[in-house]
Image (cartoon, rainbow, N blue to C red; front, side, top):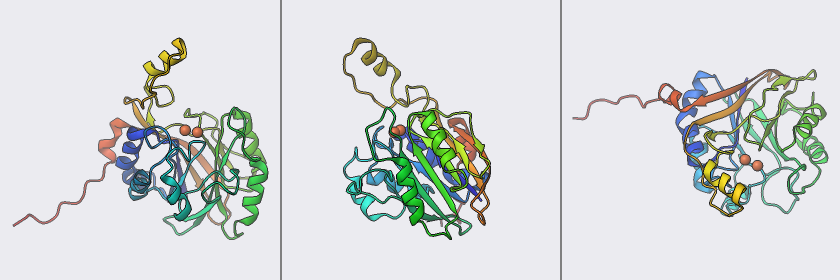
Length: 276
Ligand SMILES: [Fe+2]
Ligand SMILES: [Fe+2]
C-alpha cells in the first residue's frame, strides 16, 4: 500500500495546491492513504475548522499539527471531537486533542498515525521517546501499519527517533523545518525514514513567508507582518510503500508537485446531459 505524508501546509497557497491536486494525485500515484501536516494552514499559523473541513473534503484522511497547533483557538472543538486529527503525543495530557488515531486506507488497512514534537530549539515538552513508547503500547497489535510524524528542528534528533523506532513503526517522517531533506531511506528493520518531507506552500519565500518582511525585521530589528508569500507554490511530501501484512516499509520516495502540473492533475467533473 502507498501512504503519502504532505509536508507543512502554509496558508492559502498551500491549501489551494492540496485541494486542487489531491484527487488527481491519489489516482496518479495510486495512493491508499494521505496524511497532511496542517500546522501552518491558517494564514501561516495554526488551523481553522473551515480549512480542516476543506482538507478532509479534498481527500486528506488524517491531519497532524505541530508547535503551532493552538494558534487558532477555534480548532480546539475539532481536536476534541474529530477522529482524524491528532495533537503531538508528547504534549501534556491536559492539552486538547488525541495522542494517536487510526484511519482507514482505501484498501481497508487500518493505519495508526502519531505526531511527536522535538525538544531542540523548541519550546520544552515532554520526552518524545517515552511518549512514543507509551503510545505504541496502547495501539492494538493488529494495527500493523504505523506512521510517525516527528515535528522537530534538529536532524540529529530526527535520525535518533528513526533509529529508535526502526522495526517498530512503518515510517518516521519529519516535518517543521519546511525544507525537504535528501536522506529518504528504509532502515534495516523496515522503517522508512526522512528528516523532513518539506513544505507545501510558496517556495519563493523564507519558510513560506515574504522575503522582504523577514529581511527587514532581521536586518533592522523593526517588527513587520510576516505575511504568507505567493510565488512558486509547490506541494512537498513523501510517499511510503508499506507491506500491509507486516507493517514494514519497502520503499520511500520524495514527491514534489508544482503549480504548472495542476492543469494535468485536476479532475474535471464529468459532463452531464445537455440542459433542455
Ligand atoms: Fe511548520
Ligand atoms: Fe512547526
